[in-house]
Image (cartoon, rainbow, N blue to C red):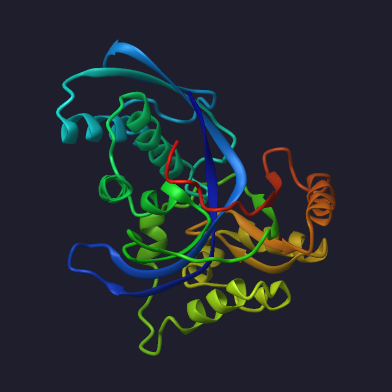
Length: 291
C-alpha cells in the first residue's frame, strides 16, 4: 500500500495568547499542495521498521511515523503487530510544511486499512491530535481553519486550484523558538482569517494576495536574512502575496496559473545556490475519508 502525504502552507497565522498547557492559542488557515512524500506500508511479523530516502530523517522513536504506529497499537490493543514503512521524502525537512505531520497522518490512515481496524473519522482525528498540532488537518488536507493549538479543524469549500511557488532555504527554524519570540498584541483578533476564508470561498484569487499574514514571520525574518532573500527573489520573479509558511523557513508566493508558477520556479532555480530548493505547486482537494 502506497499513500501520498501532502505538504501544507499557512495562508494566515494569528497567535492569540499563551495557554496553560504551554502551547499557544492560535487560529490559522491552511491549504495542502501537491508536493508530496510517498509512504509505502507492508506487513511484517512484529514491530515497526521505518526507512527513509533522506538520511537526515530519523527512523527511530523520534519519527512521528513510529509514534503513530505505537499509538494505534496501544489504543486498539494490538500487541506488537508488525509493519514496515518506507518514506520516499520529497518535502524538505523542518521547513514549515508539515512534512512529518503529514507522514504521521498517512500512517494512521494506512494502518487503519492495513490492519482492518475500522476506525471512524472522529477516532482518527482524536489520535491525530495526540501526535501533533498539524496532524489532524493533514489527515484530510484541502483548505481549513484550525484553532486551539491547531487540533480543532473546520474545513472550507474553497474553489481552486490555486498555484504557488515555494522557496526553501537550507536552514532549520525551531518552531518552539519562533513561537517564543512572539509578543502579545492586545488588539489581535481573527478578522483577517475571516476575510481570507470569504475570499477563498468566493474563488476571488485577485484579492487573496493582499490578505495573507503570519504573526511568526517578523521575528524569524529578523534572525534569518535568508527569509528576506527568498521574499525578494519571489517578488523579482513576479510572484504575489509572498509569505513565510508556518515557523519557516519556507516562503511561498502566488502565481496566476500552473504554467506561470513553473516559469517562476525555473527562473529561481537558476538564481539560487544548489542547496536551496524551489517548487511549483498547486492546491489539492480535501482527501476522501476512506483510503
